[in-house]
Image 1 (tube, rainbow, N blue to C red):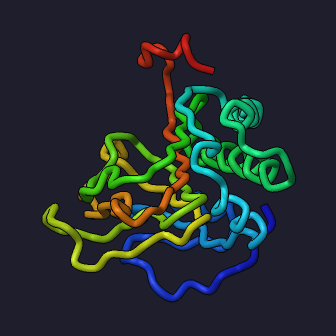
Image 2 (tube, rainbow, N blue to C red):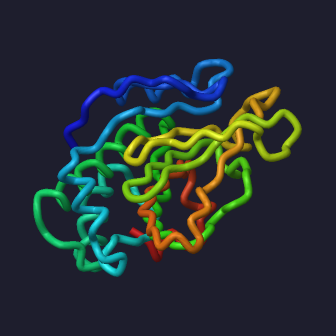
Length: 217
């Protein structure tokens, strides 16, 4: 996906901002609870994905090696009836590229990939994921909301990740002490008529701990 640079004016303390995909590796820096790769999708791609019937948006849950992501996402788009064309190819290429980036940062041999089509208030409470790390990229609709909370209450200042910008977050299994207090949630869209398309990647170190692995890609 062709991208243009975007000037960053605001982000919570402890959240890094990357101008290049390689910058996501800053998640390993002390005190960096999350990293956002601030980028803008091509207007033609955004217009295409925004106007698609939600019924043909790709949706999937699978565990696979990074090098299998491209073919798996292509099959997912085909099964969903996502229209063939350059924009679908951009989406497939982008997910494959993000999967490779994520694998490079986490060193995990497998990953859990989810494509969620969201129309309601999924995960509306601020929380930290029970994983070591997670990459989230919202291709359609408002992005993930986040903020810092020292006591577990809802953050006083809430930031929203731009649409199309990947966010890499530490989870509760990340060896971090003390915790940064970074919480996040899906934006509440109930009743707005909006549909979100969200990619989620989690690292999987050992498929033996995943009982459904044999049934997945």
